[in-house]
Image 1 (cartoon, rainbow, N blue to C red):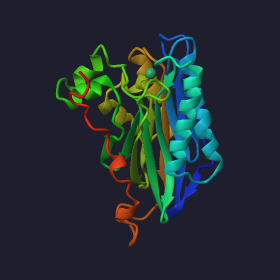
Image 2 (cartoon, rainbow, N blue to C red):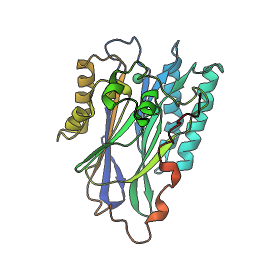
Image 3 (cartoon, helix red, strand yellow):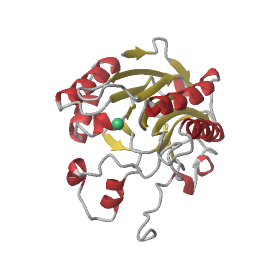
Image 4 (cartoon, rainbow, N blue to C red):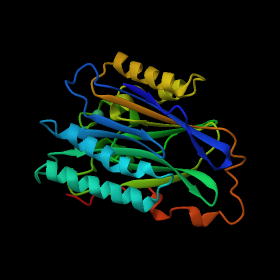
Length: 284
Ligand code: MN
């Protein structure tokens, strides 16, 4: 399934936001528990977990709650937090109160205008990912809430070992699944030509970052890039559902990396933008 927003969305600085998405059940799973939303100003991927279709329901609830915010031109951080909490409550009801009986990841990109400048807001909860391609920069913006990320943070395993680790699918935070559902946020100025990639672990677990970067740098239209990334995940085995959403900023914003006077530090989200602290030896 592929979708594209044909008309695009206008932002300050004559920036035009366009998006595309593609999802596939994969080659192993019977159902696709991933859901996605691609409706300005919100773009997200949710990877559901839990038996008896609970994962499918959980990821769909996340999409439904955030979809309510797409009827307006702009969103605030508070609204994103509220949508997340509403979804979390509904998912907990589906799960019947059992720990981890239903849950979902949420990896989200929203566009936000602050003092006439356009920003990407990135929200993450779980191990779906947001990557950013901006000129020479290619980076994973989100930090996984996963067991292997914690092991990497402690220097116990390498990124390569994480790809094959037996606990690589174990998340440490999720929406509706257990006690910790606190998201991380990032706020990044939009640059003309930026491509933001949101994906489930069905892509990042099968295709390495160097390959993802190479495909994302292709001059091809984003709907083609979405299809190519899904095809690569399937060719690598397609062990999981795979979902890809790409959001692209086209047009000149001028020099967004040098904010206009008076729009400097106060627009930054303070300590909340940082990845969570390393848990260390807190739990025995
Ligand atoms: Mn998955």
